[in-house]
Image (cartoon, rainbow, N blue to C red; front, side, top):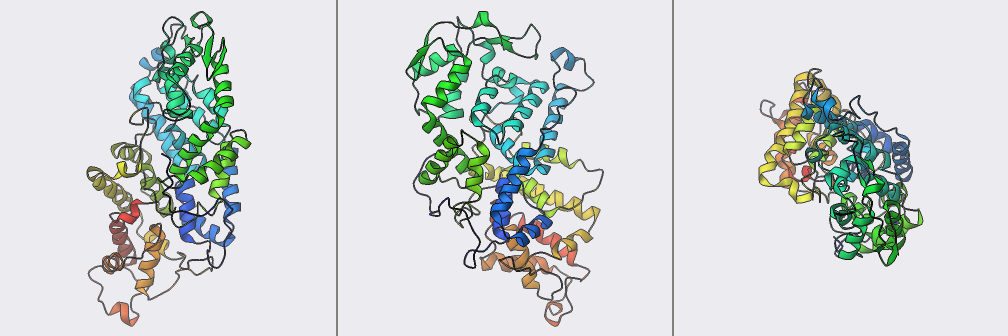
Length: 497
């Protein structure tokens, strides 16, 4: 993961807009596409007028911290017998939980961006543990800790029902220690592969984690600690010996491997939120902030998202959109209304699954690797068609909203208040639209000319664009924008954030 080849040389100093480095549409979309799932046109215009990225980051993160977790459904604590005698199939309850997550991702901005991130870090697969109740309990737990204290997060996740079943903690007893969770605790969740632990540490840690096996003979019930199944021998973990139990493992880990742990987590945050190419120096600064804040996730994220480094041009457009990014960002950014009978939440849940991102069910314990994995040739057409489906449904519902979106779009690169209101300049309109949806705007003349040709559509004489007949009030403008959106969906730049 670690590398010194990053071309982003900016520091973690706070980014302050200037005439030479203005706060603009590109940076606003960059922030919202990374920290959340896109910004509506209204949010973009508000951010431009405020011209204060640091205050915006504080507001977004503080709002996320203050947000209540999603209320669990009525079946959130059912056992296997209750689900077997329920009116729906088990997979329908699990799909209901996924639908709730998709709905939250669309609405809850930063908190749910972090919920998605951590669900791909503390991985469980709901088709492995199967219980819909475990699924919703896990989801609630990840929401609760998404921007909180990482030590508390690690402590709670290891005793959660979903994790105990997924990594065989519920089979870990004194006479037959199961090393699965102990291994992943270090390798995937806190330290990284072969980073500061030995096979002996894993074996000894497994013994200290024994005993969480008591289900009271209730399938899919709460898994509790059974003292009779706990290994009471002395264990040596990271050079410290004693009759260690679960709490001791977490304490020793954070005391003895704080630098390795903070560096590993901050590197993962960096490669997810900034660039797939890691920057050792920046990660080291983030790790120190993480340690100094007693592992407060929000603190290190505020430092990162406010920084010159985050807003550097090398960071913008450097990450390939995941299926959730692609679909949910577009939906939020375009903010079109759809026919009331369209189950768009179900559509998104199923679409991202088909495209490789089945929420709450990553591909394996290492999670989705992302980036180029998202755009294999067999997935690209599905990515294009998912965007076209949303545009098509919006078109059938209300064509005027396509024109209304263009009118009032910000033109200027800085917060100068220039908006598309009334113009006969078709090139300006097309350039404004492309700059809005492409992370670094449009610089390629070939792509621009193709987009211009698409926007002009058959049936409008060329001279109308030259003699002032065509304006933004022209009747075919909604159709022109719809055609351009379908074209944009296939352009490589649109696949980036």
